[in-house]
Length: 548
Image (tube, rainbow, N blue to C red; front, side, top):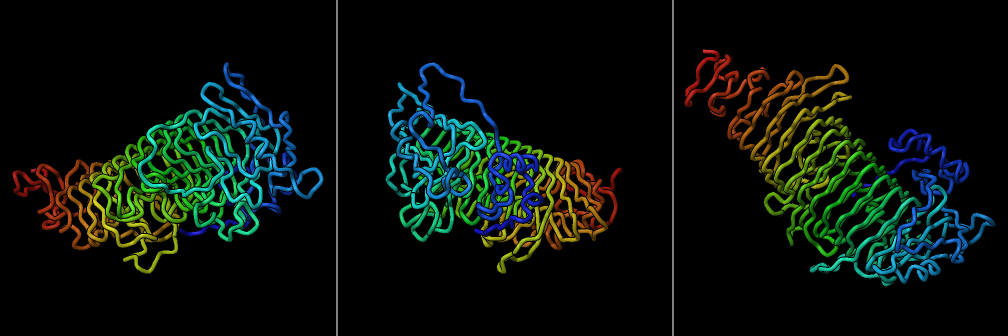
């Protein structure tokens, strides 16, 4: 994976998802050095979310305040030191683990973290029925140097493989809630952070995560700040009914995913979150963990400044799975590699990503959809895509940005897409660079492409781009053009590309002003004939002038 670095000196200007007011509030809560990053990894800050009130009492729930069970709560969340007198803070982890150990369905327990605690890992009941509720700014956890484990985990402290393989347990635990606190994962460099194995991510057995939740249903995560974890900020494996809202995640370097879901997983809702990751903001990775299908994922109203907004992959070339019904809406951000990775390797099942809808989003990236796997239905609705340059790899046939193409880092894969629909989408060029709607390589196929509103808009006086669709070594079964603005595009497809298009139809073909070969036109569709240069129509396979 690529590594994204963000010099701290320009933190305010470059981290679009953090409001300046929030950063200043964080400085007020933690001291002025917070926003200067003097004691955090470059490019990472701890914004202020809160304050928050203690949770309203729920009948049957036991409540434990950290300050009332003997926790010292003397930790500086920026660097893990004693915030009162310097030197070492007190490890409150063992005391909290003991207090929470008795949580069961008959005796659910909520820890109210009413201060800032150093922890050598929280290992809470595997079956769930527990919660941690902070009070907003200044409350939370710093993972102790040398913990060599996850920050918060449901289960024992024993380090086991992150990828146990199939089958997943058939019975899941229940009811875990995390809200209104900060977790600093103390990622460091593998020698003076959470991991001291010499490997930043963990050790030879497993990677270490900020929060690691396994075999659970009914998970609620609200208003957390998660920074600087060794790898994934929150990892989920074999989970269902997951709600994540109002969270801020920041990480630097490879493998620092924000929300990482291993298969199987189902019924996931992510909203109002801010991601600034060195890797994927959201990962739906079927083959990892126990391995299994992932279904019903909704993401809305989030902001991104990461390698990618979302990775969806279903196979590593061996076992094959599916991702079903994913919806992303009202999102903004800048992605340095690809906004959406559909796949990681080739060799997927047909329609492996069965349904993906992306709507009302404004995204900046080299590629919007980087595809290596077969997909079913993909719908892009009300999308503004601003292309930017990237470090293309040498094996790429061309270095052109596009709404859809093979991703820069994974050239050479072949896919089949059943259906791609563009509704009121635009590419916005803010520099004179080549760009295409689609690029098909490696004999990849899209069976049905429908355009119901598309334009290429320029912020300056730039040259026309040569093609809407660059068919290098691929094909399109049916192309339907119902509505689009063609003025900044020379031709619908690349030279000789029509030999790789099965048929052209749609109510907006004639209005494009482009010429089309007679042979590819469907019956009853007005168009400009490439043979005569005149408006034409085919009736029962015979070309006639239009109107007759």
